[in-house]
Every structure is written in structure tokens, then in C-alpha cells.
Image: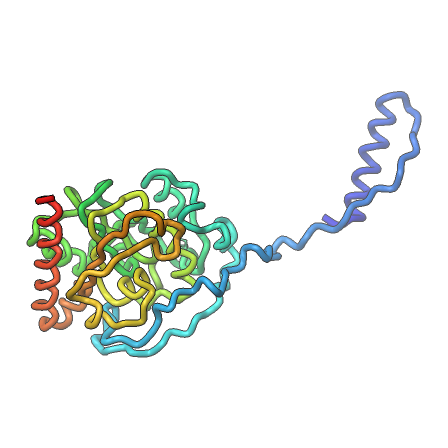
Length: 297
Ligand code: SF4
């Protein structure tokens, strides 16, 4: 509404009030209205902070979501989030410690309503994650694919079925002792890697999930999950096979107990190339040994 429109409306209301009171029109000081901002204006504080973008977008051995079967060693260029709807949960308000979620259902509700990045415009369902509270293991993938987008559940396609078998081989399952989540909660179109701005907008949800879940260990499935959580550019072949630690990832949770992290190949990579199965099995055995040690303590 413009200042002039507001003035007209205010004068009309004052005249009406005077008339209803006693019929005498009173003199008043001039109003000091100003024009409203245009409806599509984006407040400065909702802009994504460029300094928070992770360093996780570097070359690597392969792209586990590349359905063409060809390696993709390119560096994705960061693209601005053009979605004007990215205002309902502004990125500036997203940090793990400030998210208004004290339980997993609270967090899932926030994810379901979130439009903080461009992926909201193309998703069918947001995929917050699923599993048990206080799990032994939190499995982290890259992002939902087509099956996950259609169902709102993580890891339900062929790769998800293989993941379930891999977990079952060491006594783990999403219904008994695991939780499964992703770096981004909405599907990147065409199963491309999530872009840095999308990861920056979404990663506070994962940090908050980790705070709420407090798993005994984290299993990162694939390059994007590993590089993002550990804020590194090292490739998955270099990262896998040994434990490192998650200590909050800059989420404000650094004071909490560090959580062991093991990285391994994404199940879809195993479906494409059988040679990854042996090292993935070695990783699973390492994870089982770690969990067994914890049980013995
Ligand atoms: Fe929100 Fe994450 Fe979905 Fe982007 S990917 S809209 S930040 S929940």
C-alpha cells in the first residue's frame, strides 16, 4: 500500500469516527505514512551467507548417483537460489542450535514445511529421515532419489534395498538400531549432486538430527555425504577404511562428545561396479568391531 492510499484510508476512518461521535469534524496533525515494500522484495537478512558454504565440492573418483555409469569429475559451479519462495524459513535463521525443534517429529515437521532452497520447488516430498531414536548408527547419504521423493522415505530404491542388506549383515536395521538421513532433504533434479547453496541451506537440519539422535557411530555413504560432514575435499577412496570424528561441524555443538565417523562407498556405486563390494565389506566389518567394542565397555 502506498503512503497516499494509507492517508486516504486514515482520513476516511477519522471522519467516520467524528460523524458517529457527535457530527463535528476535528482537525488532526498530518499523518506520516510511508510506502510498503514491494511484495517480492527479499529482506537482506534472508540471503544465504556465502561464507558458510562448505568446501565439499571437489573432484572425486566417481559420482555414485550418476545413472549414466560414467565418472563425473567436474566441479559443480555454485548457482544462486532463484526461488523467491525461499523465504518461509530463511537461511539466516537456520543453525542447528537455533532450530526450533526439540524432537525428531518437530524436526520432520520443519523439514516438511521448509522452502529455504531451490529444491523445494521441484520436490514431491521432503525426506527428513527415518529410524529409531538414540540409534547405534546414523547412516548419512547424499540426498533423495526418485523413489525417495515419491515416498518421502530415505533409501527405498534399489540402492536402499542393498543398504538394508549391508546393514543386516552386521546386525543393523532401520527398525531396530539405526537411523537413516541425507545431507539434503529434497531431491536434486535428475539425481545431480546438491549444489553448495542447497547444502548450506539444508545442513543445519542434519546437525540438529545428530544432536537429537546422539548415535554411537556415523556411517557416511558416498563422497558427497563424507566430504560434507567432514568438511573436506578428500575423495571417498581416501576417506574410507578408517574412523575419523564428527565434532559438531561448525553447528554450535562442538562442546558435545565427538562421534566416530566411518565413510564407505555409496550402495549405488556397488550396484554399478562390483569391485567396490570387497572394500565396502571391510568397512562394515570395521564398523561392527567398533560397535562390539562399545558393547564390551
Ligand atoms: Fe529446505 Fe533442505 Fe528441502 Fe532445501 S533441501 S527446501 S533447505 S529441506
